[in-house]
Amino acid sequence: MSMLDSLHVEATQMFIDQNPVTVTVMRSERVSDGAGGYVQAPFKAIATVKTRRVARGFVGDVQARTTTEGAIVIPGWTFVFLPDEPIQPGDQWTMNDHLHEVVFISVSPPWRLNAEVYEHG
Image 1 (spheres, rainbow, N blue to C red):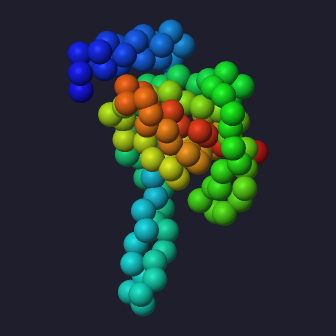
Image 2 (image 1 turned 180 degrees about the vertical axis):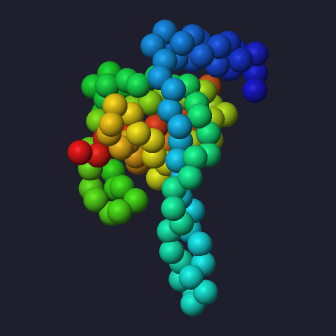
């Protein structure tokens, strides 16, 4: 990472710190079913991270995405993370009594991670 990238990471941190939320990221992994297939393991906490929630209207054009259950949805939020946070599609957390699911990750530019998130019912 270049010195300029480091400055951008600092700017991302300041952006998050202006209006942060802390979420406990939950992840489920595929486990062999012993017959050549797999089953989905229960979700378990993998990290508690600080992020910033941004309404999707402020981050540009958002496309329809697919949830882990196969539903086609329009993400309602983008969550901005530092680039080294362990976030991936399918991760979930609860916020304001609503389940949030990561349906897409953007790692460009390299100094932040943007997670498009669908808020379940």
